Length: 165
Image 1 (tube, helix red, strand yellow):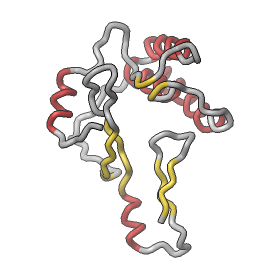
Image 2 (spheres, one colour):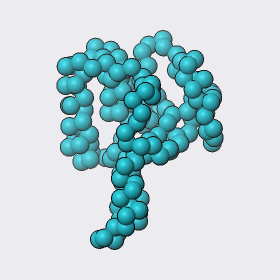
Image 3 (spheres, one colour):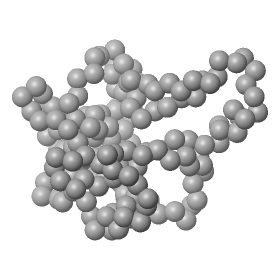
Image 4 (cartoon, one colour):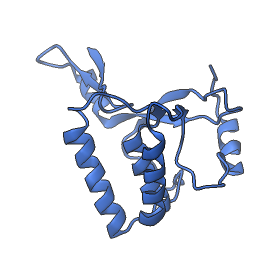
């Protein structure tokens, strides 16, 4: 069995079996997906590491959402355009984004978290900064003047047994 990580779709992992008749064990893993969790940054110079955790594809409905998502017609239209870009246009272009998450992922997160108006402003601001003279590194979507980590998020991450690099 081989694990393949797609270059054009960050954090996407695909299990491929070289055996034409996969064993029953391989079918067992079809009910699970690989999820990644972000750890808080202690300083601007240190980046939190990503940890993988095997979770069922059907999460418990009582589990609280990490972020409140804004769902409207405008958000759905913007996300549809972004998914078309990521699926059809992005694989043809070379990777050039200097930030993590990439500009398209940043835009998707901004639209989901802040809605159409603020999401468009944040996306435009990010695209203006994504150039050779701009910065680089970890840059999550945040509204202007908003702090990076909310107090309840810090408590949530302190409870888990995570290691930092």
